[in-house]
Image (cartoon, rainbow, N blue to C red; front, side, top):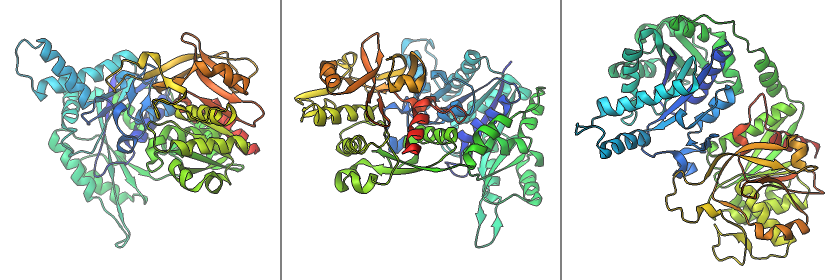
Amino acid sequence: MAKYIFITGGVISSLGKGIASASIGKILESRGLKVTLMKLDPYINVDPGTMNPYQHGEVYVTDDGAETDLDLGHYERFTRAKMTKFNNATTGQVYNAVISRERRGDYLGKTIQVIPHITGEIKERIKKVAQVSNADIVLIEIGGTVGDIESLPFLEAARQFKVDAGEKNVLYIHLTLVPYIKVADEIKTKPTQHSVQTLREIGIQPDILLCRTEKPLADEVKEKISLFCNVRKQAVIESRDVESIYQVPMVFKAQILDEIILSHFNLISRPSDLKDWEKNVVERQLSPKGVVRVAVVGKYIGLQDAYKSIYEAITHAGISNQLKIEVRKIDSEDIEKLGPEELLGCVDGILVPGGFGNRGIEGKIKAIEFARKKKIPFLGLCLGMQCAVIEFGRHLCGLKDANSTEFKSKTKYPVISLLAEQTNVKDMGGTMRLGAYPCKIKKNTLAAKVYRKNIILERHRHRYEFNNKFRKLFEKKGMVFSGIYQKKDLVEIVELKNHPYFIAVQFHPEFKSKPDAAHPLFREFIKAAATK
């Protein structure tokens, strides 16, 4: 029978439950156990696919085409677990499923209530993850902060789970804040006490506390937390800020968090081994041999989480090349106002990420033109590829009005146009080209050199695609179409010859990058930037 770990958060949001959950998964994996992770999100949206990046951060896409919370990216980067549509559940999905069954008459006229119907649906989804993954341990992260109205059904389901599965099969971990008051030069435990009190009022007694803190927790502080929160002192785990998030598994391991968890579950496993992770990830990241400056020219630069997987993939490429990456976050609208020379003149590489809508597009196109003319290594992702096509069409193919029908429906030269299957789509949620699709790599191209494979599998999230009516013209003018989805003859990768590194892709390679296995497109991009 699978074991279940529920991770909750208290005091304030953004303490890092996703990284903590992924790190716990990592150290348990290092003990030879198979893990999977799940995120329960309290918002009523069915998924984050229709949410503005400034509201929610990036939308993480799985191989099976689910649009999910960005924490699933942490889960895949830290562990070997493969995320699917089952690994993320929202309040919207849960209520939608229950209401749909009620409308069909499945409940035979019963009154539908939060308990047992909503909590029952949540528990069934958790059990489904365990069943599909065949994992030894399932880690379930509950979004939001304890005390929020929105998360109460998820917390109630977590409470009930111990009754259903048995005390030795369920464990509760609470992530909380232990603030340092500089004026008083004191660490305060009261916020943690109140957070745990709120959790206990709901019916959950945490077994382990992860304490986010700026300062080390002295023994007397741990003893106080232990006494007032009814948690063993040994299970009060210090979680101080570290230079790299990839150090967190080692921080937890040093405090025998894995031993505490295994002891609770009465599990015996091999000793933990994080030597490769420490050597090939952490040490390489913290001892770089050079610095590379990379500009990310985007539309949602104001929010760190809007491009979370991209920033992490750049970091992974830095680790692979043992380089420190200075990321310059450039708003594409600023390039429209100030021009590329002022903002991009001192960078070693330019990356243009995805996005939607007309705002800032001309700035992205100017950045790409600058990269092409100045021979600066360039990597375009999704919309970044589409902008590269528009720039090439305008300036090298003589198509002055070249554009995407997303931005200008009646453009004379629609070099980017709506996918045929999207023509009659009315609902915006979950209807894009989503998930992993195969791509055939053309021999003797930059893509072939980077991937060293004939067929690749990458994840997509888009409605628009290169218009094949212009393919011959573009090839004549020097664009190389090096990756094709053969089933529907769709262009997936474009590149330019006579350039140090100019490649753009319709998919999102950032979703498949790991700290100990950087994605080849990012790895070679950073290598080219370092050479420059």
